[in-house]
Length: 113
Length: 112
Image (tube, rainbow over all chains, first blue to last red; front, side):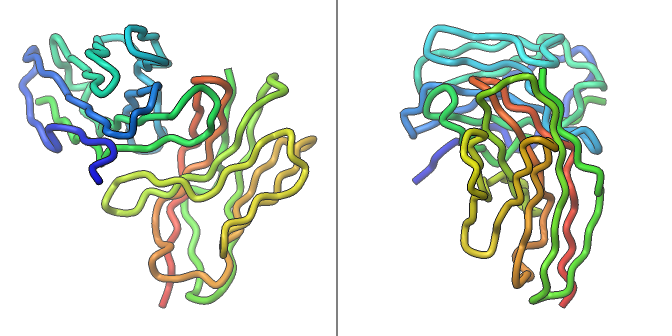
């Protein structure tokens, strides 16, 4: 029973490098989210996708792009990584708007040197 | 936009005792949800309890209960009979539609 799977779990990048964080869910949920978690700041929404084929910006979208490849997968791309993007990234899903419960992946720790 | 404030960065409780974590929020929406999420050291966030704003009755889940004061925009979490496994970071959150807003978290230590 996988739920929400994120890869990779850990990554170290140099400034300027690019990478993609992958998120896949087997829960058949419509909505998917990408958050970043920084010490003392809680979780901040980067992008979300209310349904397959749609994406919307969240609170902190600059420096990121997303793709909702299909209902199962929602990827987050850093085109040119910066040290300010060092963070723990969480993917989450929700069955539909306003159902009220997010299901989270285990997180991906990204360090940008 | 909504804001969620957790004014207690750290709390501690003796095993088997009761602890209350505080949360206040600010929203102009009439229809919203409130949540408490738990993040243990393993990092994965899990839902502890959920409250629909239109319901006056406080939500309860076993040893976890909330005190929802809508007029005061307060949403505290009470953990009864605390256990070692309750040690974690606890996040208060609110949501409307696809928008979830999280507080900065309270780190709970359970003392044996």
